[in-house]
Image 1 (tube, one colour):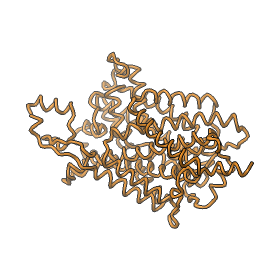
Image 2 (cartoon, helix red, strand yellow):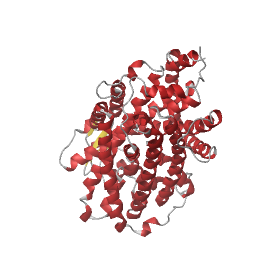
Image 3 (cartoon, rainbow, N blue to C red):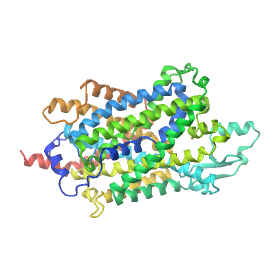
Image 4 (cartoon, helix red, strand yellow):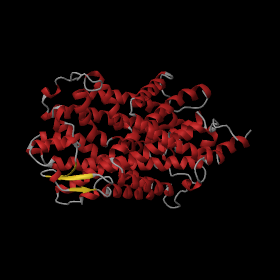
Length: 510
């Protein structure tokens, strides 16, 4: 039996890229950057900006975005080195296989599956909320029991419609003399709009990467244009007093305002930045990966960071941060402009729907390509390597992962779905950062079209920052991750290790 620390030879990686079932190289630097922006600009800018400002950092949420961006930039530089050096589908899984060995590669590959799968389902639930709200503005009502997770209890509140009852809403209604128990309720069957969103986008991904990239680019253009319009118009409605104090005084609890609040805000909004690593999953579909992958990764991260910071400045200047703890803080910002600007509200919702659509697309695109790479190595069944004869996409793995995402988006609430996304991403970032240092030591002679600067300092800093954020996550998040990883280990030791093509390749070349 071969060692679980067997590394995948780079010669094997490059020969695979040109072998059978190869993916079509159609993406240039603009397409890759657009994919990155499509993955990053979504729920973060439309939801998390306001909520993190209201709960943790106040106007200093701007500093939180900068801190989180620095952590992502460190990881992004490491990703860029690997993506240019190993331009193969598989992202961090492939990088770990070439540097740290088969076991850790499997570990990170299984981890990436949970990141992309749950991220797609999480964003689909957010997409559903905006679509339901948008249709309601035009008098189109989707049955309440088809708009939320299975078992969710919704209450028909006067002037609010169907909402999930929270302690805050119950208290507010009681203060108004309304008996909550007397209001009609609905128990949800499943979230139909979320399921439809995943179904349509999965079908689009099967048709082709070029068509998917075109759709994504259109969605990116729409949401970025509307965000820039919001920033441009919003600056004229800024009230400087709303920025005072810039860093609100700490309440006495760690993480609630003050500098600790800025740091906690950075951890919370980290979710807003995940997605740039999805660019690296498309390396095998890039025209010139050695040159284009670093541009796509760092370009998308830079564009998104600038937009996040500008939105945070404008939003906290238009509306006092204490009023931004809502599901649609950008819409609240539009309301603050006055009735004359009410026409902007539906446009914001359209941008949110477009933005979330592109995030779902990129997440669902990345997930099957992880399966594809793992199956090519024999660690998963060969069914996941099947490429459509006409469309040249991994269609069977896209169908399987799409079906899983449809079920998750339909039956689980966004709170549970979202918990596992950040920890999976952070773990991937840690391993990639460590891998750069390891490979520089073990194989310094390998050509590196793009080099991470200041090695080992930047990779070590990136790994440490991400590790600290992982440790700050709740225990139940860790428990779910541990259970998922134990399932993965069973698959590896009972199937993957016995079918490893890398082990066979290494043995035959001794």
